[in-house]
Amino acid sequence: MAKVERGHGARALAALLPKLAEPAMRKRGFTEAALITRWADIVGPSLSGDAVPDRLAFPRGRNSGATLHVRVAGSAAVELQHLAPQIIERINTFFGYAAVSRLALVQGPVAPPPARTKAEAPAPAPPERAAAIDHETADIANPDLRAAVAALGRAVAGARAPRRG
Image 1 (tube, rainbow, N blue to C red):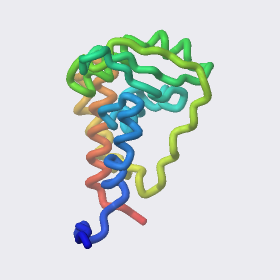
Image 2 (cartoon, helix red, strand yellow):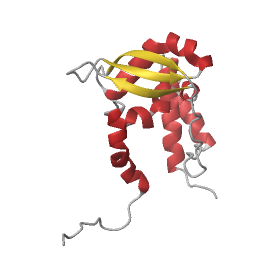
Image 3 (cartoon, rainbow, N blue to C red):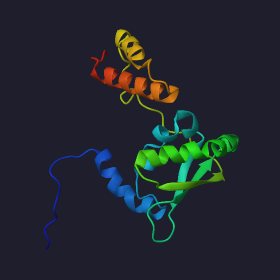
């Protein structure tokens, strides 16, 4: 009888999930799970509730220039179509190469994103630190970049703040 190799101790489900989901995701063309798991970070919270990546189709023999099929709730299709160049740029910036060259919108129902539990929600930055972060980022000319850097600073400050409970 063959000896079964077992892991050492209990492991978190989150550590096992990527390997378990990989075959199903590859079938849909998603070689990078991060496109699905970080979708809200890539497109922003306002669009992530109305649009989800459905399938990623690469041209034969290539690993760039893919068409990303996105399932979109009817009300958001026009907005997503208008923002397609920016979304493609965000996706490619996220991956660090020209992974996606076009979006194909498929209208249909979109399941709402899962709500964050209280344990997952980041602690807010202390008010004096949040004000300091806003002051430190005020010189950034690009408003989107300024907001992103300030949000990152508040998240880091909140993570370092002692939790009250």
